[in-house]
Image 1 (tube, rainbow, N blue to C red):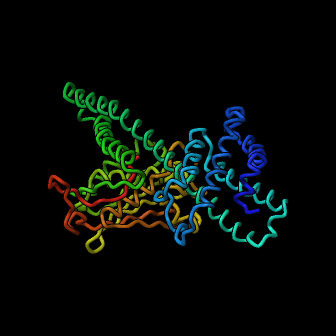
Image 2 (image 1 turned 90 degrees about the vertical axis):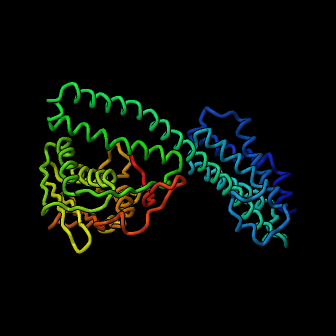
Image 3 (image 1 turned 180 degrees about the vertical axis):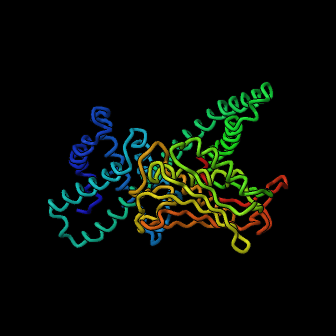
Amino acid sequence: MRLAEFIEKNHGRIVDAWQQFAERLPPFDGQASTTELREHAGRMLDAVVDDMRAPPSTDRMAVPPERRDARGSGGSEHGLQRHAAGLSLIALTSEFRTLRAVVLRLWAGAGFVRSPEAFDDLVVFNESLDRITGDAVLAFTQATERDRALVMGIVAHDLRGPLQTASMAAHILAHRYPQLGEEDTTAQLRRSLARMAPMVDDLMGVAAFGLRGSMNVRPVGMDLTALAAEIVSEVAAEFPAHRFVSESRGPHVGHWDRARLGQLLSNLLRNAAAHGEPQGVIRIVLREADDRVVLSVHNRGPVIPEAELEGLFSPTARGSAAKAGPHLGLGLFIVREIARGHGGSIGVTSDAERGTVFSVVLPIDAGLQETPATNGAGDKAGHAIRLIGI
């Protein structure tokens, strides 16, 4: 008996064995009926058999799931259903692994693996199940990304209202009580609110275009030393136990995106305060080298293992030196992307003697390194970079 025929004739036995496994998955415990579980398994088996009996093609394995025909719909449907039920991706793939094991064990126990066609059937079955699994995983991950984008869009949209209200209130207070406008605290508040606006816009962009959506760097003439002083003042107010020391020889004037570099420096300083030694000194150094400016942030604390240094800039990986917190761990990833958007780079060193030093190298005239791109209206769009502003 051929394997496809064996699966059809033993449909009930296979479903029974698979169901016993599926019922132990926590998200389904007490939430899915026996009928629903059996229907899930039945549709998967039917999709595998249909795929096994489809006309052979030498390049079917090379076709990506999103470009296949209706034969993969069984896996896609299953992936969407499992996503809606709250299963994890690991649980989803475990179901397919279990289905493979159940079918092969029953077939081997029946003695059909000794037939001349057994090897061919095994190859076709595994290829078909792999394709169905790929369809399910693709549908599951796409649904997960859509949910994530929706949540981010809602959060960004709801943040805009309170942010605009706070900014308006600060503006009214400064107008109504001019003496408040001269206080450092009020000035810091208005600068912080102004810096939050593009971050919310970035969040909206991520929701619209995904985690790798394009953002723009818009360089203007500015003094990096003055910007650094503003950001240091803001962060020092947030971390009063630390001492912030700035070292710079005169102004460092160039063409950069002021809002982006403010975000870059803010992330570096907050990272140093959060992960450095308590009540330690955080040193910010600005210096020029040829046609570039080097911005360094130095702190002392636990040495970061060399194997983890490169992973610090990944949007998903976090080293053991990182402390758990309410944030997503994207700060250093954002720093790297802002530096790259300006045609620059970032590096990090960490040892017991010198502590941890993050160094950002920026061309002095980042906005003049190449002709800026233009949008549909003909306006300068700046340099496109992949950036998450959270």
